[in-house]
Every structure is written in structure tokens, then in C-alpha cells.
Image (cartoon, rainbow, N blue to C red):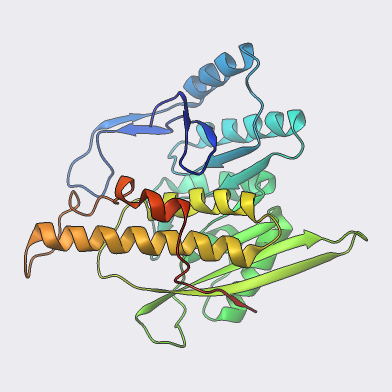
Amino acid sequence: MQNNRGYSVLGFEVDSINSVQFSNHTGYAHWKGQVLTADELNVLYEGIKLNNVNHYDYVLTGYTRDTSFLETVVDIVQELKRLNPKLVYVCDPVMGDQGSMYVPENILPVYRDKVVAVADILTPNQFEAELLTGRKISTEKDALEVMDLLHQMGPDMVVLTSTDLISPHGDQFLVALGSQKMVRADGTTSTQKIRMEMPKVDAVFVGTGDLFAAMLLAWTHHHPKDLKAACEKTVSVLHHVIKRTITYANKMAGPGKRPSPAQLELRMVQSKKDIEYPAIVVEAIVL
């Protein structure tokens, strides 16, 4: 990705800025590169402003390691929302998984105290949701309460992209949960909550969280008041991309061998049709 203007397959005009520029993702044995600083982000944004093209409908953020960078993102999002009060900020609070953080620990209070408050859509995994709320999730009831706490912190939509909860269909399924708070015409609010169960794949993929957040942005644009439809399309895209990737990786690795990180690179280009027109393979259950 480059800091220039391009079109996504789902029809969005995209200005992308790399928070990090690495030779490859960090799932490889070795990686080199640079982390964008807050000052450098400000310079880029200043250039956009000077040309009066800082008018956006959506902002999406993901992996970053720098607290001042993240604080600058908050300032920029707030300014963009003043220009367009309908702007939707989608935040993937990338901090860690499976009980351990893979970003500096001082980034947590910035997400918790500043970023979540300006986010409209939040896509943490279970561990990140627990970090943000200070609440452990052991049951589905816990998870629903944690999503309610996150709503109180700011976002109208919260999706727990993965959890450790046991699926009724067995341990071969991954449970994800979603919650959307909506305001009715008379001013009262309602909340829709859903559960999804996805078949697990015995491999480590890098980038699935990024893909999830991007797809959720796209499908909530098309289904702004239908969390079930947006999440079904999002998760189904993930399923198709992962299935195509693991099939390719196993073929390249050969019988009895585990695929390498290079072989497990997500097959995005090859999945273009599935991204644009996903066949629904995961049905969300309304809770």
C-alpha cells in the first residue's frame, strides 16, 4: 500500500497511509523497516489539508506501535468529524492475542482513554476487549456485558472478531460476537446482538484481522442498520479467503509438511470475486 489514491474492489476511493513500512509482516523470521512518527503523519495530513481534499466518509486504523502517532490519529479524526459529522471511524485496536501483547504496553491507555471514545465501529478480539474494559470473558454473558461496556465508552458497533468461547458445535469452531446500538425515530435506543461460528483452520494467518475490519467497514456501508447481514458477508469473505489460502499453502508445502509464512500469505487477488460477491457460508444467530 502507498500513500496515494486508489480504488478498492468494493468501490471505495481510498487514501492509505502506512503506520509502519516493513519489508514483510512480522510473522516471518526476519523483518526490517520503519515506523511512521506522529510528526511524519502530521506532515502528510497537512499536505492533504492544503489541497482541500480532507473530506472523508470513513477512517480505518489498525496496527501501530507508537503512542504519539495514535494520539495524532485521534486529533485528525476529531477534525475530520467536524468537517463531516457523519464520518464513521472504524478502529481495529491491534494490541495482542491469546493473553499476550505484541505492541508496547503504554499504548493500551491511549486506546482505552482516547481512541475508543471517538470510534464508531470497534473490532477487538477477546483479549483486546478484556484489556480495554478490565473485564475477563469466560462466558457468552461476560462477552455481551463487555460489549455493552465498550458501547458506553463510545462505539455504536462492537464486533469481537474472535473469542475463546466454546461453540455448541464443538471445539472446531471459532465464536465471534457482534453488537450494534441504534437510535429509533422516537429517540429511544435498541441494541442488536449476534453470534457467529466459523470453522477453524489449523494454521497461523497474518492479516485476517485487517481484512475483517476492512470488510466490516465495506459491508456496514451497504447494510448500515443490519448488523447480521454485514457480519455474515464479512465473515464469509474471511472464510473464502482462508480456505483458498490454506488449499494453496498445503499444495505448495507438499504432503505432511507445514506451510511457511510465505506460502500462507493471504490469497487476496485470487479472491476478488469472493470479496465482491461473497457466498454466505456463515449464518449469524440473533441473540
